Length: 169
Image 1: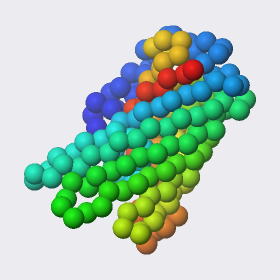
Image 2 (image 1 turned 180 degrees about the vertical axis):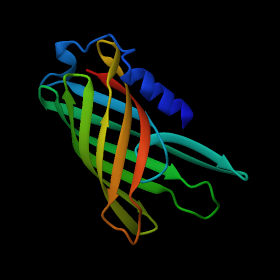
Image 3 (image 1 turned 90 degrees about the horizontal axis):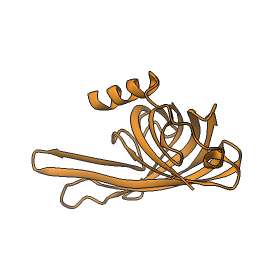
Image 4 (image 1 turned 120 degrees about the vertical axis):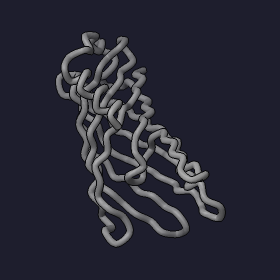
């Protein structure tokens, strides 16, 4: 967690001097993202946790299409293995939108759902971060996210700190 906060702080302090080329965030282009993050809620991030001989892991990705300059409609899928014998994995899906303010501040809103053993939980996610373009079509995006639970009897609301890697086509 400390590493994520340090990376986010460095990015916000301006270590990213490469700007996105006009084509990276323009209408008709694509973005594919992979995130590392916590397992706080249903997520489409890469995670790995090992405790007392149980290994819990998650894998997922998101993709988006820019319907106008700096505005992408996105969808994502993820899977989490709980690492315990006899437990089913968690399937996660996400749909939403992401907008880049000044090409460097991505903000997003989405609907996230998860399903395990016929139990479904849903969240509305709000996020903001910083797009550090290390190349004209590759960005590292430290992000803070809040997941508001729509099913408080099944899932909790939670904050997440993510570090995303976005490839723009």
